[in-house]
Amino acid sequence: MDVDNPGMEIILNGLANIQRFIGEVSMGEGSLIASAPILLLAASVVIILGVLGEAFFKKTGIPDIAFLMILGVMIGPVIGIVQPAAVIEIVPYFAALALIIIMFDGGYNLKIGQILKTAHFSVILVILGFAAAVGTVSVFAHYGLGWEWLDSILLGTIVGGSSSIIVFGLVRKLRISEKAKSMLSFESALTDILSTIVAFILFEAVLTGSFSIDLLGETLGRAIAVGLILGFGVGIPWMFIISKLSNAQHNYMLTLGVLFLLFFLANSFGESGALTALVFGLMLGNKKYLLKKLRIKLPEHTIDNSLHSQVTFIVRAFFFVFVGLLASFGQIEYVIFGIVAAVAIYIGRIIITHTALVRGFSKLDKKVTSVMIPRGLAAAVLATIPLTMGLQNGEAYPQIIFFIILSSVIITTIGLGSAKKIEPPEGSGGFVTETKDK
Image 1 (cartoon, rainbow, N blue to C red):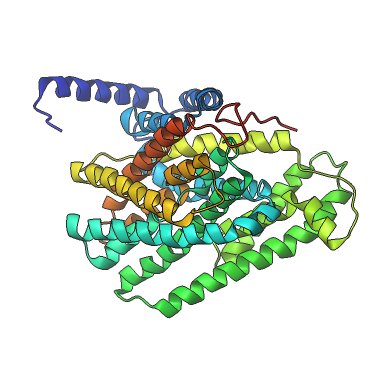
Image 2 (image 1 turned 180 degrees about the vertical axis):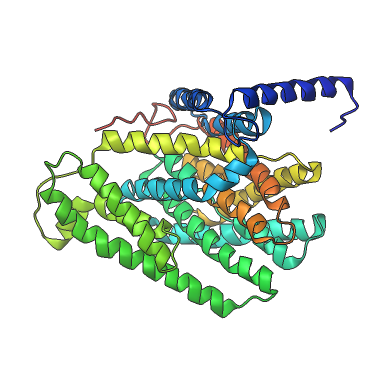
Protein backbone atom coordinates (compact mmCIF):
# COMPACT_ATOMS: atom_id res chain seq x y z
CA MET A 1 0.00 0.00 0.00
CA ASP A 2 1.14 3.57 -0.69
CA VAL A 3 1.48 4.89 2.85
CA ASP A 4 2.59 8.31 1.51
CA ASN A 5 -0.85 8.85 0.01
CA PRO A 6 -2.77 11.37 2.22
CA GLY A 7 -6.01 9.39 2.01
CA MET A 8 -4.29 6.15 2.99
CA GLU A 9 -2.55 7.93 5.86
CA ILE A 10 -5.94 9.08 7.23
CA ILE A 11 -7.30 5.52 7.05
CA LEU A 12 -4.25 4.03 8.78
CA ASN A 13 -4.36 6.69 11.51
CA GLY A 14 -8.05 6.01 12.05
CA LEU A 15 -7.46 2.28 12.41
CA ALA A 16 -4.57 2.95 14.80
CA ASN A 17 -6.84 5.15 16.95
CA ILE A 18 -9.53 2.44 17.05
CA GLN A 19 -6.98 -0.20 18.06
CA ARG A 20 -5.57 2.15 20.73
CA PHE A 21 -9.07 2.65 22.14
CA ILE A 22 -9.65 -1.09 22.24
CA GLY A 23 -6.35 -1.46 24.04
CA GLU A 24 -7.31 1.13 26.64
CA VAL A 25 -10.56 -0.61 27.54
CA SER A 26 -9.05 -4.09 27.47
CA MET A 27 -7.53 -5.93 30.40
CA GLY A 28 -4.35 -3.89 30.19
CA GLU A 29 -1.54 -2.86 27.95
CA GLY A 30 -0.10 -5.75 25.97
CA SER A 31 -3.23 -7.89 26.33
CA LEU A 32 -3.84 -10.19 23.35
CA ILE A 33 -7.63 -10.26 23.83
CA ALA A 34 -9.97 -7.39 24.70
CA SER A 35 -11.87 -7.26 27.99
CA ALA A 36 -14.86 -9.54 28.61
CA PRO A 37 -17.56 -6.89 27.83
CA ILE A 38 -16.04 -6.07 24.44
CA LEU A 39 -15.45 -9.73 23.65
CA LEU A 40 -19.08 -10.51 24.52
CA LEU A 41 -20.19 -7.59 22.33
CA ALA A 42 -18.25 -9.10 19.43
CA ALA A 43 -19.79 -12.51 20.19
CA SER A 44 -23.29 -10.99 20.15
CA VAL A 45 -22.61 -9.48 16.73
CA VAL A 46 -21.41 -12.85 15.43
CA ILE A 47 -24.53 -14.66 16.69
CA ILE A 48 -26.94 -12.01 15.40
CA LEU A 49 -25.28 -11.91 11.98
CA GLY A 50 -25.20 -15.71 11.93
CA VAL A 51 -28.97 -15.91 12.45
CA LEU A 52 -29.67 -13.11 9.97
CA GLY A 53 -27.27 -14.76 7.52
CA GLU A 54 -29.19 -18.04 7.66
CA ALA A 55 -32.45 -16.19 7.02
CA PHE A 56 -30.76 -14.34 4.14
CA PHE A 57 -29.55 -17.67 2.74
CA LYS A 58 -33.03 -19.22 2.88
CA LYS A 59 -34.45 -16.17 1.14
CA THR A 60 -31.86 -15.68 -1.60
CA GLY A 61 -29.81 -18.88 -1.82
CA ILE A 62 -26.63 -16.84 -1.21
CA PRO A 63 -24.51 -18.22 1.69
CA ASP A 64 -23.49 -15.97 4.57
CA ILE A 65 -19.98 -17.44 4.79
CA ALA A 66 -18.06 -14.58 3.20
CA PHE A 67 -19.82 -11.99 5.39
CA LEU A 68 -18.84 -13.83 8.58
CA MET A 69 -15.24 -14.16 7.39
CA ILE A 70 -15.07 -10.43 6.67
CA LEU A 71 -16.49 -9.80 10.15
CA GLY A 72 -13.57 -11.84 11.49
CA VAL A 73 -11.16 -9.63 9.56
CA MET A 74 -12.77 -6.56 11.14
CA ILE A 75 -12.64 -8.00 14.68
CA GLY A 76 -9.05 -9.18 14.32
CA PRO A 77 -6.58 -7.50 11.96
CA VAL A 78 -8.55 -4.26 11.50
CA ILE A 79 -9.94 -3.30 14.93
CA GLY A 80 -7.71 -5.50 17.07
CA ILE A 81 -10.23 -6.99 19.51
CA VAL A 82 -8.31 -10.26 19.15
CA GLN A 83 -4.61 -10.08 18.29
CA PRO A 84 -2.98 -12.49 15.78
CA ALA A 85 -0.75 -13.99 18.48
CA ALA A 86 -3.85 -14.97 20.47
CA VAL A 87 -5.43 -16.53 17.38
CA ILE A 88 -2.39 -18.76 16.88
CA GLU A 89 -2.72 -19.91 20.50
CA ILE A 90 -6.45 -20.64 20.06
CA VAL A 91 -6.12 -22.56 16.77
CA PRO A 92 -5.54 -26.10 18.13
CA TYR A 93 -8.41 -25.90 20.65
CA PHE A 94 -11.07 -24.32 18.48
CA ALA A 95 -10.06 -26.39 15.47
CA ALA A 96 -10.48 -29.63 17.41
CA LEU A 97 -13.92 -28.60 18.72
CA ALA A 98 -15.17 -27.42 15.33
CA LEU A 99 -13.80 -30.49 13.57
CA ILE A 100 -15.50 -33.12 15.73
CA ILE A 101 -18.84 -31.29 16.09
CA ILE A 102 -19.24 -30.59 12.37
CA MET A 103 -17.94 -33.98 11.22
CA PHE A 104 -20.32 -35.68 13.68
CA ASP A 105 -23.18 -33.54 12.38
CA GLY A 106 -22.25 -34.35 8.79
CA GLY A 107 -22.19 -38.08 9.48
CA TYR A 108 -25.45 -37.88 11.42
CA ASN A 109 -27.21 -36.34 8.41
CA LEU A 110 -25.73 -38.70 5.82
CA LYS A 111 -27.80 -41.67 4.70
CA ILE A 112 -25.97 -44.96 4.25
CA GLY A 113 -28.25 -46.01 1.42
CA GLN A 114 -27.40 -42.88 -0.58
CA ILE A 115 -23.68 -43.18 0.23
CA LEU A 116 -23.60 -46.70 -1.20
CA LYS A 117 -25.27 -45.47 -4.39
CA THR A 118 -22.94 -42.49 -4.90
CA ALA A 119 -19.66 -43.64 -3.30
CA HIS A 120 -18.01 -44.24 -6.69
CA PHE A 121 -18.83 -40.70 -7.83
CA SER A 122 -17.47 -39.30 -4.55
CA VAL A 123 -14.23 -41.26 -4.88
CA ILE A 124 -13.78 -40.09 -8.47
CA LEU A 125 -14.29 -36.45 -7.42
CA VAL A 126 -11.88 -36.91 -4.50
CA ILE A 127 -9.10 -38.39 -6.64
CA LEU A 128 -9.46 -36.06 -9.62
CA GLY A 129 -10.26 -32.94 -7.58
CA PHE A 130 -7.47 -33.42 -5.04
CA ALA A 131 -4.89 -34.23 -7.73
CA ALA A 132 -5.93 -31.27 -9.89
CA ALA A 133 -5.89 -28.79 -6.99
CA VAL A 134 -2.52 -30.00 -5.66
CA GLY A 135 -0.98 -30.03 -9.14
CA THR A 136 -2.26 -26.59 -10.10
CA VAL A 137 -1.27 -24.83 -6.88
CA SER A 138 2.11 -26.60 -6.80
CA VAL A 139 3.01 -25.47 -10.33
CA PHE A 140 1.91 -21.90 -9.57
CA ALA A 141 3.93 -21.81 -6.34
CA HIS A 142 7.06 -23.29 -7.95
CA TYR A 143 7.13 -21.05 -11.02
CA GLY A 144 5.24 -18.05 -9.67
CA LEU A 145 6.77 -17.72 -6.19
CA GLY A 146 10.04 -19.54 -6.86
CA TRP A 147 9.46 -22.13 -4.11
CA GLU A 148 11.06 -25.57 -3.99
CA TRP A 149 8.89 -28.41 -5.32
CA LEU A 150 8.36 -30.04 -1.92
CA ASP A 151 7.22 -26.74 -0.36
CA SER A 152 4.96 -26.09 -3.35
CA ILE A 153 3.35 -29.53 -3.12
CA LEU A 154 2.79 -28.99 0.62
CA LEU A 155 0.95 -25.73 -0.13
CA GLY A 156 -1.17 -27.49 -2.75
CA THR A 157 -1.98 -30.34 -0.36
CA ILE A 158 -3.16 -27.97 2.38
CA VAL A 159 -5.77 -26.47 0.02
CA GLY A 160 -6.36 -29.69 -1.92
CA GLY A 161 -9.84 -30.48 -0.62
CA SER A 162 -13.16 -28.73 -0.09
CA SER A 163 -14.21 -27.92 3.47
CA SER A 164 -16.61 -30.46 4.97
CA ILE A 165 -17.81 -27.86 7.51
CA ILE A 166 -18.97 -25.54 4.73
CA VAL A 167 -20.25 -28.22 2.36
CA PHE A 168 -22.24 -30.06 5.06
CA GLY A 169 -23.96 -26.81 6.04
CA LEU A 170 -24.76 -25.82 2.46
CA VAL A 171 -26.02 -29.04 0.88
CA ARG A 172 -28.59 -29.63 3.61
CA LYS A 173 -30.37 -26.44 2.52
CA LEU A 174 -30.09 -26.78 -1.25
CA ARG A 175 -32.82 -28.29 -3.37
CA ILE A 176 -30.56 -30.66 -5.22
CA SER A 177 -31.08 -34.41 -5.46
CA GLU A 178 -30.39 -36.59 -2.42
CA LYS A 179 -27.67 -38.45 -4.28
CA ALA A 180 -25.94 -35.14 -5.11
CA LYS A 181 -26.14 -34.10 -1.44
CA SER A 182 -24.70 -37.43 -0.36
CA MET A 183 -21.97 -37.34 -2.99
CA LEU A 184 -20.81 -33.81 -2.13
CA SER A 185 -20.92 -34.42 1.64
CA PHE A 186 -18.99 -37.67 1.41
CA GLU A 187 -16.47 -36.13 -0.99
CA SER A 188 -15.75 -33.16 1.29
CA ALA A 189 -15.33 -35.43 4.31
CA LEU A 190 -12.85 -37.63 2.45
CA THR A 191 -10.82 -34.70 1.08
CA ASP A 192 -10.60 -33.07 4.52
CA ILE A 193 -9.20 -36.29 5.94
CA LEU A 194 -6.90 -36.87 2.94
CA SER A 195 -5.51 -33.31 3.04
CA THR A 196 -4.77 -33.54 6.75
CA ILE A 197 -3.00 -36.91 6.58
CA VAL A 198 -0.90 -36.10 3.50
CA ALA A 199 -0.01 -32.64 4.82
CA PHE A 200 1.39 -34.01 8.08
CA ILE A 201 3.51 -36.50 6.15
CA LEU A 202 4.82 -33.65 3.98
CA PHE A 203 5.61 -31.52 7.06
CA GLU A 204 8.08 -34.18 8.12
CA ALA A 205 9.32 -34.57 4.54
CA VAL A 206 10.09 -30.84 4.29
CA LEU A 207 11.95 -30.94 7.62
CA THR A 208 14.01 -34.00 6.68
CA GLY A 209 14.29 -33.23 2.96
CA SER A 210 13.03 -36.69 1.92
CA PHE A 211 9.65 -38.18 0.95
CA SER A 212 8.52 -41.80 0.96
CA ILE A 213 5.51 -43.25 -0.87
CA ASP A 214 5.62 -46.25 1.47
CA LEU A 215 5.29 -43.96 4.50
CA LEU A 216 2.34 -42.20 2.86
CA GLY A 217 0.51 -45.47 2.26
CA GLU A 218 1.25 -46.80 5.73
CA THR A 219 0.10 -43.62 7.51
CA LEU A 220 -3.03 -43.29 5.38
CA GLY A 221 -3.96 -46.93 5.94
CA ARG A 222 -3.45 -46.69 9.71
CA ALA A 223 -5.57 -43.54 9.97
CA ILE A 224 -8.44 -45.11 8.00
CA ALA A 225 -8.29 -48.31 10.05
CA VAL A 226 -8.32 -46.41 13.36
CA GLY A 227 -11.21 -44.18 12.26
CA LEU A 228 -13.36 -47.07 11.09
CA ILE A 229 -12.62 -49.33 14.05
CA LEU A 230 -13.33 -46.64 16.66
CA GLY A 231 -16.34 -45.22 14.80
CA PHE A 232 -18.03 -48.57 14.24
CA GLY A 233 -16.73 -50.19 17.42
CA VAL A 234 -18.23 -47.50 19.66
CA GLY A 235 -21.04 -46.26 17.41
CA ILE A 236 -22.93 -49.54 17.17
CA PRO A 237 -22.88 -50.34 20.93
CA TRP A 238 -23.81 -46.73 21.69
CA MET A 239 -27.00 -47.12 19.64
CA PHE A 240 -28.11 -49.77 22.13
CA ILE A 241 -26.97 -47.80 25.19
CA ILE A 242 -28.64 -44.55 24.13
CA SER A 243 -31.91 -46.42 23.51
CA LYS A 244 -31.92 -47.46 27.17
CA LEU A 245 -31.27 -43.83 28.18
CA SER A 246 -34.11 -42.33 26.18
CA ASN A 247 -35.60 -40.76 29.29
CA ALA A 248 -32.31 -39.41 30.61
CA GLN A 249 -32.32 -35.62 30.90
CA HIS A 250 -28.84 -35.09 29.46
CA ASN A 251 -28.50 -37.91 26.95
CA TYR A 252 -27.34 -35.55 24.18
CA MET A 253 -24.59 -34.14 26.39
CA LEU A 254 -23.61 -37.70 27.27
CA THR A 255 -23.27 -38.43 23.55
CA LEU A 256 -21.02 -35.38 23.19
CA GLY A 257 -18.92 -36.67 26.07
CA VAL A 258 -18.43 -39.99 24.26
CA LEU A 259 -17.61 -38.08 21.05
CA PHE A 260 -14.86 -36.11 22.83
CA LEU A 261 -13.50 -39.34 24.28
CA LEU A 262 -13.39 -40.87 20.81
CA PHE A 263 -11.47 -37.83 19.54
CA PHE A 264 -8.87 -38.35 22.28
CA LEU A 265 -8.53 -42.05 21.47
CA ALA A 266 -8.27 -41.39 17.73
CA ASN A 267 -5.47 -38.87 18.27
CA SER A 268 -3.69 -41.30 20.57
CA PHE A 269 -3.66 -43.92 17.80
CA GLY A 270 -2.57 -41.54 15.04
CA GLU A 271 -5.87 -40.44 13.47
CA SER A 272 -6.99 -36.79 13.38
CA GLY A 273 -10.43 -37.67 14.81
CA ALA A 274 -12.29 -36.49 11.71
CA LEU A 275 -13.08 -39.94 10.30
CA THR A 276 -13.92 -41.32 13.75
CA ALA A 277 -16.43 -38.51 14.43
CA LEU A 278 -17.92 -38.92 10.94
CA VAL A 279 -18.45 -42.68 11.33
CA PHE A 280 -19.80 -42.30 14.89
CA GLY A 281 -22.38 -39.78 13.65
CA LEU A 282 -23.19 -42.03 10.71
CA MET A 283 -24.03 -44.90 13.08
CA LEU A 284 -26.39 -42.81 15.23
CA GLY A 285 -28.00 -41.06 12.27
CA ASN A 286 -28.74 -44.35 10.51
CA LYS A 287 -29.88 -46.27 13.57
CA LYS A 288 -33.23 -47.32 12.07
CA TYR A 289 -31.58 -48.46 8.82
CA LEU A 290 -28.90 -50.48 10.63
CA LEU A 291 -31.31 -52.11 13.09
CA LYS A 292 -33.53 -53.12 10.19
CA LYS A 293 -30.58 -54.74 8.44
CA LEU A 294 -29.53 -56.45 11.69
CA ARG A 295 -33.18 -57.44 12.38
CA ILE A 296 -33.03 -56.02 15.90
CA LYS A 297 -35.82 -54.09 17.62
CA LEU A 298 -35.03 -51.26 20.04
CA PRO A 299 -37.07 -48.39 21.51
CA GLU A 300 -37.37 -45.40 19.21
CA HIS A 301 -34.87 -42.74 20.18
CA THR A 302 -33.22 -39.88 18.33
CA ILE A 303 -30.76 -37.20 19.31
CA ASP A 304 -32.31 -33.94 20.56
CA ASN A 305 -32.26 -32.24 17.15
CA SER A 306 -33.16 -28.81 18.49
CA LEU A 307 -30.22 -28.75 20.91
CA HIS A 308 -27.89 -30.37 18.38
CA SER A 309 -28.76 -27.81 15.69
CA GLN A 310 -28.11 -24.93 18.14
CA VAL A 311 -24.70 -26.31 19.10
CA THR A 312 -23.79 -26.88 15.45
CA PHE A 313 -24.95 -23.37 14.53
CA ILE A 314 -22.81 -21.70 17.23
CA VAL A 315 -19.69 -23.67 16.28
CA ARG A 316 -20.23 -23.06 12.56
CA ALA A 317 -20.82 -19.30 12.89
CA PHE A 318 -17.78 -18.74 15.09
CA PHE A 319 -15.65 -20.92 12.81
CA PHE A 320 -16.07 -18.59 9.83
CA VAL A 321 -15.29 -15.56 11.96
CA PHE A 322 -12.28 -17.45 13.29
CA VAL A 323 -10.98 -17.96 9.73
CA GLY A 324 -11.23 -14.19 9.23
CA LEU A 325 -9.12 -13.66 12.36
CA LEU A 326 -6.29 -15.50 10.59
CA ALA A 327 -6.11 -12.85 7.86
CA SER A 328 -2.76 -11.19 7.20
CA PHE A 329 -2.13 -8.48 4.62
CA GLY A 330 1.65 -8.56 4.45
CA GLN A 331 2.63 -8.90 0.78
CA ILE A 332 0.48 -8.06 -2.23
CA GLU A 333 1.90 -10.95 -4.28
CA TYR A 334 0.44 -13.40 -1.76
CA VAL A 335 -2.98 -11.77 -2.15
CA ILE A 336 -2.78 -12.06 -5.94
CA PHE A 337 -1.51 -15.64 -5.73
CA GLY A 338 -4.39 -16.66 -3.44
CA ILE A 339 -7.00 -15.21 -5.78
CA VAL A 340 -5.43 -16.71 -8.93
CA ALA A 341 -5.05 -20.13 -7.27
CA ALA A 342 -8.72 -20.18 -6.23
CA VAL A 343 -9.83 -19.29 -9.77
CA ALA A 344 -7.60 -22.05 -11.19
CA ILE A 345 -9.09 -24.58 -8.74
CA TYR A 346 -12.58 -23.49 -9.85
CA ILE A 347 -11.75 -23.93 -13.54
CA GLY A 348 -10.37 -27.40 -12.85
CA ARG A 349 -13.51 -28.25 -10.86
CA ILE A 350 -15.74 -27.32 -13.81
CA ILE A 351 -13.77 -29.62 -16.13
CA ILE A 352 -13.83 -32.49 -13.61
CA THR A 353 -17.57 -32.12 -12.97
CA HIS A 354 -18.48 -32.32 -16.64
CA THR A 355 -16.11 -35.26 -17.10
CA ALA A 356 -17.20 -37.33 -14.09
CA LEU A 357 -20.94 -36.61 -13.85
CA VAL A 358 -21.97 -37.69 -17.32
CA ARG A 359 -25.36 -39.16 -16.47
CA GLY A 360 -27.92 -39.43 -13.68
CA PHE A 361 -27.51 -35.85 -12.43
CA SER A 362 -29.68 -32.84 -13.22
CA LYS A 363 -28.39 -29.52 -14.55
CA LEU A 364 -28.81 -28.04 -11.06
CA ASP A 365 -26.83 -30.91 -9.49
CA LYS A 366 -23.95 -30.35 -11.91
CA LYS A 367 -23.96 -26.59 -11.42
CA VAL A 368 -23.85 -26.87 -7.63
CA THR A 369 -21.13 -29.54 -7.84
CA SER A 370 -19.01 -27.37 -10.14
CA VAL A 371 -19.01 -24.39 -7.73
CA MET A 372 -18.63 -26.39 -4.50
CA ILE A 373 -14.93 -25.57 -3.98
CA PRO A 374 -14.85 -23.79 -0.59
CA ARG A 375 -11.72 -24.30 1.47
CA GLY A 376 -12.04 -23.91 5.24
CA LEU A 377 -11.18 -25.53 8.56
CA ALA A 378 -8.53 -28.05 7.49
CA ALA A 379 -6.71 -25.48 5.35
CA ALA A 380 -6.92 -22.77 8.03
CA VAL A 381 -5.51 -25.03 10.74
CA LEU A 382 -2.81 -26.61 8.57
CA ALA A 383 -1.72 -23.15 7.38
CA THR A 384 -0.42 -22.25 10.84
CA ILE A 385 1.68 -25.39 11.34
CA PRO A 386 4.61 -24.50 9.01
CA LEU A 387 5.11 -21.31 11.03
CA THR A 388 5.14 -23.14 14.37
CA MET A 389 7.53 -25.78 12.96
CA GLY A 390 9.92 -23.15 11.62
CA LEU A 391 9.64 -24.33 8.00
CA GLN A 392 10.97 -22.29 5.13
CA ASN A 393 8.35 -19.75 3.94
CA GLY A 394 6.41 -20.57 7.13
CA GLU A 395 5.07 -17.04 7.49
CA ALA A 396 3.76 -17.08 3.91
CA TYR A 397 1.40 -20.05 4.31
CA PRO A 398 -1.25 -18.32 6.51
CA GLN A 399 -1.30 -15.24 4.26
CA ILE A 400 -1.64 -17.18 1.00
CA ILE A 401 -4.09 -19.76 2.31
CA PHE A 402 -6.39 -17.16 3.87
CA PHE A 403 -6.91 -15.54 0.47
CA ILE A 404 -7.41 -18.94 -1.18
CA ILE A 405 -10.07 -19.71 1.44
CA LEU A 406 -11.77 -16.32 1.07
CA SER A 407 -11.64 -16.37 -2.74
CA SER A 408 -12.96 -19.94 -2.94
CA VAL A 409 -15.81 -19.09 -0.57
CA ILE A 410 -16.71 -16.02 -2.65
CA ILE A 411 -16.66 -18.11 -5.84
CA THR A 412 -18.95 -20.67 -4.19
CA THR A 413 -21.24 -17.91 -2.93
CA ILE A 414 -21.55 -16.28 -6.35
CA GLY A 415 -21.97 -19.66 -8.05
CA LEU A 416 -24.78 -20.75 -5.76
CA GLY A 417 -26.43 -17.37 -6.24
CA SER A 418 -26.52 -17.96 -10.00
CA ALA A 419 -27.57 -21.60 -9.55
CA LYS A 420 -30.80 -20.54 -7.84
CA LYS A 421 -32.06 -19.49 -11.28
CA ILE A 422 -32.03 -23.13 -12.41
CA GLU A 423 -35.32 -24.93 -11.90
CA PRO A 424 -35.04 -27.84 -9.42
CA PRO A 425 -35.76 -31.22 -11.05
CA GLU A 426 -38.51 -31.88 -8.47
CA GLY A 427 -40.49 -28.94 -9.82
CA SER A 428 -40.95 -25.33 -8.84
CA GLY A 429 -40.52 -24.02 -5.34
CA GLY A 430 -37.18 -22.30 -5.19
CA PHE A 431 -33.54 -23.11 -4.71
CA VAL A 432 -33.36 -23.34 -0.92
CA THR A 433 -35.07 -26.13 0.95
CA GLU A 434 -37.14 -25.01 3.91
CA THR A 435 -36.03 -27.14 6.86
CA LYS A 436 -37.93 -27.68 10.08
CA ASP A 437 -36.43 -28.83 13.35
CA LYS A 438 -38.00 -32.00 14.64
